[in-house]
Length: 97
Length: 475
Image (cartoon, rainbow over all chains, first blue to last red; front, side):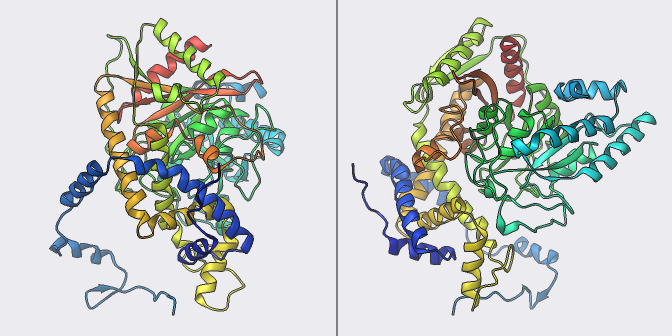
């Protein structure tokens, strides 16, 4: 049986960029085949009952505390080596231009 | 001195206590064994000879004064190469970390050494603990001592091979989806994964943090229990650790209640010989008075899919730090920061690691995250709840450890076939429960199998008890 092509080589190139891994052309072909196999393997999850899963996701959101600043949230600053104006001071990180 | 390395850990502890031989003699006997057999087994990736002999001499000096640091004082051991060891290279079997020398010790290592155990060296593994054959290593594959043409299993390949080849009385490994129990079954030794949080993971290089556990490989359950007692317990450096309960469950006054998972034993992936060996173990338990019932769990394929999704997504986040700047080998072939990251990771990471990181990134993309990751989390919750329910009626769940015996080195397997090696072991990781694999039965080719036992959270005592009963009838 022919496997359904879910990902293309171009998709793999995009994923490699996100993952910050330089891939050769032969690797793109290999991973295209393998990732499609893996997606096929995990497709069994799609059969899980949608309504029960939505209830679970909603419950998880309800279980989370409010996204608000609390006084104790600042305690980690006491462990920081360098603080500037109430913030952690860390080395600059190079990002894509 | 050959006979002393054939003895199990309990015998060696007693012999050191009675001064039948010294720790230096024991350590030298193991070093000689490693020199003799390791060129064929390829379990060790680094030997700590000088420091080990010094530690052994210090242990002997303590004993001369009538002092010891603990039960394991003077006993040699080795650890998978993903445990940080202060001043000793720790590579994760990856080019990315080939020259990494940690400035600190993992808590499990420190606890063993503070108990007087003697670190002989570091052991081979699948790169970053990703693999089920032991073949994904920059040091080459470890060889199965039962048959060198067969894989050891993985990812704790060197740990299983070294214990099976009697190069060491016990070893530390790590278990994310079965990485201690599966190679233990393939090599014919006991492999144990504790309750999530029972043993500190501080200094264990991460793969998938919600699943990773420190594990133990040894000759038998009593040996494993002794090592577990030395390393378990709360650690302030790992906030996921728990205060391990000291009260053991009472067992002598009633029969064991054992559940057998229908979906696993009747699964088409399970080899006939493996199934027969498991049935035999069930009969032996039944004969010894245990109550056996067949139960159902959420399908193994769903559990395996949830594991694949969760482990890959966590790995893609955990391993993002290896970019040649923050951590790891730096590429010399880069014209800008972006190509420095991409080339460092391309050169430093092996094929299986790249595959899993790409798959993790794929799952985390918009659209797929909702389809797969949320469902995998839901499946994990369902499995946890169902197992809690099962353990309110039963002491243990019994099944085979692996669907087959060890496969041939270099065998071409599909992604599904590779992942199936974890089919029977992933439930314990998803639910954070303790489990062990006991060597039990052999294939027609003489390859060992394992019987897998799983218990409720913090009920390790039940595992030791049942394993000892099975070991007694097996012998």
